[in-house]
Length: 420
Image (tube, rainbow, N blue to C red):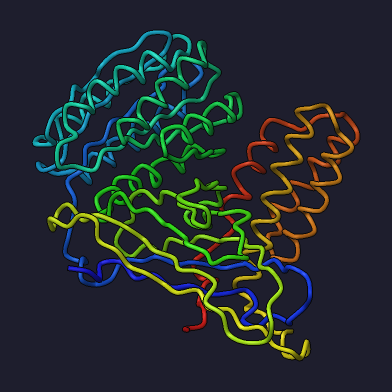
């Protein structure tokens, strides 16, 4: 049956003046599950890949043990788990198995001690072997946590890409300041997963618990968004807004159609995508400028290739005074995406040695963050601007906070959008 996913859209400017030049249009698309699948729950197959090197000693190691034990308590006999630990060696602590004895699995995790160096790739390869055993009819996830620099970064990237080919998203987590965030972000991207940063190891437990719960509720799978546009409408960018701001890019389907993968969608999740379009000049009137479509599967209900559609309508008016209205919620998201773009470009400038350009872009991002009420993140960014100006470099902690913080500025409480 159809109706498991509802698709809607909101334009940043409901009306545009009929000008003789092309105009940029922002469209916010929202896909969310409906109550028809509220009862569905997926079995999960989760593999933990945990750093227990010497630098994990103390609170970090304790928090990782506690977090893994908490995650295990969320699983049941229908679920499958495996745990691989690593320092400069790898060990399959818990081979892939159903979660039939939580207490025994938790006892195994409690034995993890800190020792040795950090070598991620062999552990990730071993973890892929384990999770592959339990992939049938289950949502599969890999959760990697580390606090250190690793050898053989190219091997890490290859393993992450292999996970992506197998349809296994990698959640790549860094704790503390001494790890390569660019590597973890790229590993997550290649696998179709996400990366996250913990300055406080006490936050790991809630994240592990949430990751398991999110996987259990990911009842919609293989979701993909396509946008078919009429002549004179050009796509310029497609951004994921929730759960994290991310440039999705897009791939051509035909001359005037693009598509992006949305992956799995959880129950009660609102998946938002911001599309930037360039629209040619139009005479006054209402126009259908395109159609958005989401294709998806719900394996637990035996559904494949289901579809939901939304027609994108745009009004052009002769009187420019009628085209001054905006939807604040959408424009706020546009600004948040703009702040994220600025910090991304600033860090690219910094990596190229152009401190002046990096500083200028970061200052623009600070202004946008302050306008959005993101005071703490803006202050961190301002402090790092001062570090750049005085020392020519940013602190490791500040750079990580900026990279990860600007991706999480959109809050669902801000998204009470007007109904079409």
